Length: 191
Image (cartoon, rainbow, N blue to C red; front, top):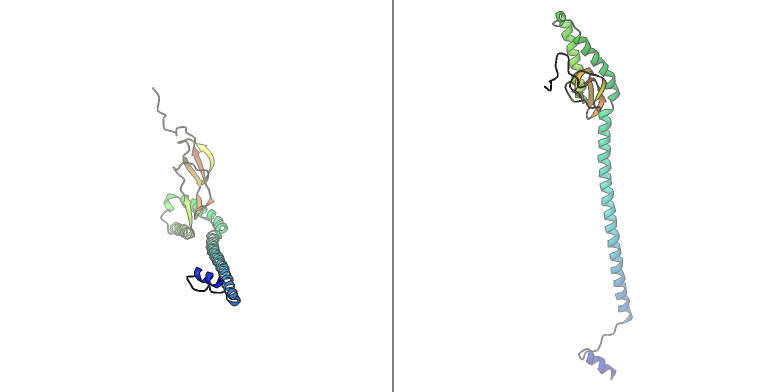
């Protein structure tokens, strides 16, 4: 009678019996699916780690290239600092040439040497700092003294300053106005 009851429950069909080999197969399928899911998770972790490592390597290469470029830009800074006094001397010598000798060939030759020096330095990224008439900036200017003139404005330049690319190579040595009127100029009266 039992057979009839179970047949009635399954619409008159006998309930299929699960044999031991089939149960083992179901268990092995479930364990395989679980193992597959674990391996997929590991593969995703490995992929994420690999992508992170690849991004780190690209950033490393970029940083090394930037450091190499910076090193190249500033490797000659000491050499250039040694050449700046030569430029200063050439400029002073040319400024001191008497008027009657200004058109002589040897003066023009010295002027050409000065221009060539400046052109070479400009090619290496050296630029003079503009000082005359500018507002005093302690980052780019070194004040040697104050003189009569507009307050905070550079009224005289003793030595040119230079930048190497975007960094200060040598500050300009200057005289800064102290706010008192210049000789020959009168202060406006309040009357």
